[in-house]
Image 1 (cartoon, rainbow, N blue to C red):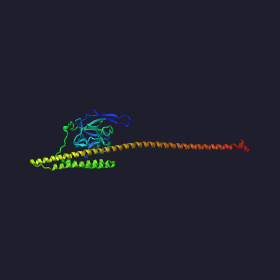
Image 2: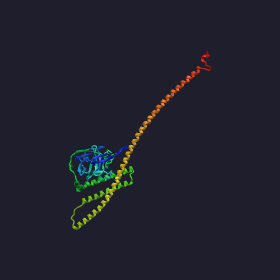
Image 3: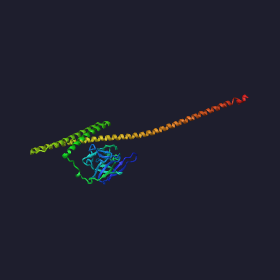
Image 4: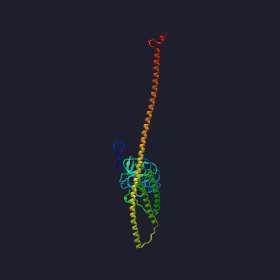
Length: 372
């Protein structure tokens, strides 16, 4: 069983269909994952524990991934942060990030390397524009046969670790909310706010640079304010939990508190539904922005290739023009030499005619006989 892909050709010949077989026999353990095109490795960012980037290889645990069985596929857990390789959505060009919840991946064989495919979809890991600089992002993209270098990955096995058991759905880790984790949660919120501010500044610059439509900019604004609302709401909940004190309650007080809590839960459910709707809209608009930027980058790259081809053609034309000029100069030199030879012959003929006219006079007598 494998995945069939039609590879487009740059000639009039039909597309070539290639099959990528699934690898069911990967050895479980610790791996480092390299892009086959650039040699950079997937890691969790040093500055944002939810962000995945590619970086030059090193021995840090944020570049080490624990490969585990998960149903009909595998899951990858980072050794430093214990987060999982996951996707923000199943849309084309969706961002790949580090999540507390695992995702299932399958590995397709490709000439000794792998295409890492999100299970039950046609999306594979794609290095953004195939760029090899540190900090480049990873997205998912259709497995359509294009830019295969961006989407081909090499696995380097580092050793065995306690990841050699198969995980089932009822064994997946669930989040915990103990009191000792509140400080870390607050710090994560602070880092998230700072990351959003920086991300929004970058998006604004890109929008100004590429003249992105206003509706996409508005969507980015809505996503920014939505995230702030969620963070502030969660922060208030944490503060209330930390400062709360348990007091003995009577039946009436207990019923009143329960009623208030139910009402608050109902209100929060309404707010959550509203925020989920806004989040879906913001995700869609952000995906449109990513797609637009990707299309513009592809257009720029294509224009650069066309410009390079035209420069090569222009260089050939210049060489031909130089050859023609040299041939023209040589022809002019030969013509000038021939004109000189013709002038010399003409002078000689004039001299011969003059001598002939001096030698013979009218009446048939020569000038010498006339003198004698």
